[in-house]
Image (cartoon, rainbow over all chains, first blue to last red; front, side, top):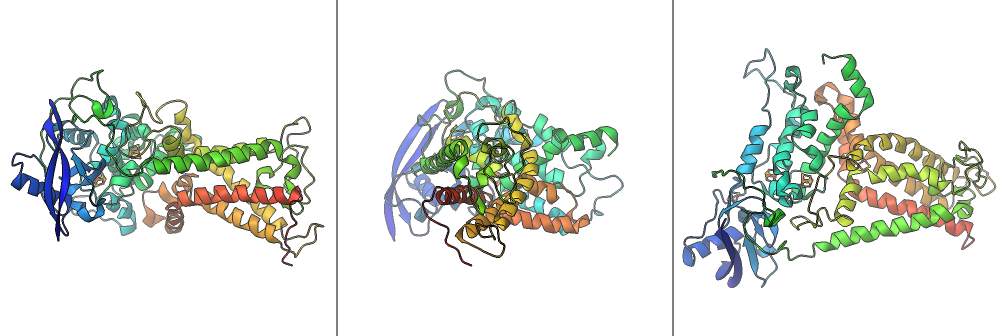
Length: 254
Length: 278
Ligand code: SF4
Ligand code: SF4
Ligand code: FES
Ligand code: FES
């Protein structure tokens, strides 16, 4: 079965743009990206849209559908209110390049600012041995497909452009949590305190744990509960727990 | 996935947030069609209801705070000298006789601080009372935002100390519930509806307290090698299960503590008498 739907797609570039209406056919079982492709094939061949896998695994097709950050390839038409116009815009936190395509370079910049995994001394690659229970927590975070929907929805940067330099965003604070929980990461031996730098250099304190990142994550990662709040608690250990603080003053070498 | 990178645009005073220069020019502050405001309104209503009720009871409830053998959770432990005589209860006049206000005000500071700095309640009131954010992808009304990076909100980091205090408080409420297994004359081996009310309440308080994020961190979350601490790992797994329900437990225990107090109030004011089971 197929029907006609009204799609309202944002078209334009950094100079300006507008929502443009399209009447387009929708068939059973289709996702929003199918319909956008049909618009591209039949009505607007120059419509810019980024996509790769159509399987919710590459993280390319992030956009906002009826005002909610989502993957276009994972949003079934049957889950949208029937008969109503479907509005699609690019992600509204990043600079727009054209139509539905944004410049997500902010996220790559933030990724580079997080110090990488530091291998333990005396253990060669290939000799790493870890227990499953020690990596369970990190494995949840490794499901991330880098769609940056969490970065897009986080009000810290979405609503405050000026916070971008100071705030790494949920995806990269989660990366810090992952490394801090990593059974082999040797950052501490090199004098790098990931707990304290998360707060001092990567803006952990900006997050007010209102969980929008968790709400939009297409991988269902419990970003706030399992990464951000544990990281905040770890920062408290380092900075606000007098006993831990005293211990670290007395025994300088950990 | 490929992308181009451009130098960040200089901040411009004409637009902020989603209207910043360089972002897609969309006039609306959000495009959500669902009832995104509903959770915010419901949360605010629920919290205000409890704040209103508990303020009234804390200030004016002293003479209806005890109906033998039950004590209202708002009035236990009693740290002032002006409480009704609670047979066997936590009636320690640590503050001496000079305190003439309601004794509930002394002890309620601790559960209040615990809940005020709780990670779930923070989310609830940041969203519902402060619209920061009102809902996901709905622009917030504030021009500036520094989150929990500075005073006063940086003080939210002391949550774990309130957690430490919450444990003895829950212990005292447990004792109060046990004292409920007496009849009004103080003989053991009896039970009434009030006993059940206090038991349910204290169970929910314990579940809420144990599901706390700070608790999860302290019992095991702070460890890097679970494999070296099997007992703490096991405990962490249990707390994590409860922690996933932290929001539900926060609301359930908030209502149960209000209802337990209401029950004592109704008994003490003579609205009805406690149905006794045995
Ligand atoms: S929980 Fe924190 S990081 Fe996630 S969206 Fe909210 S403020 Fe941003
Ligand atoms: S954490 Fe989730 S929402 Fe964020 S980039 Fe990864 S997959 Fe996307
Ligand atoms: S196209 Fe790959 S996630 Fe949608
Ligand atoms: S009580 Fe809610 S997080 Fe501690």
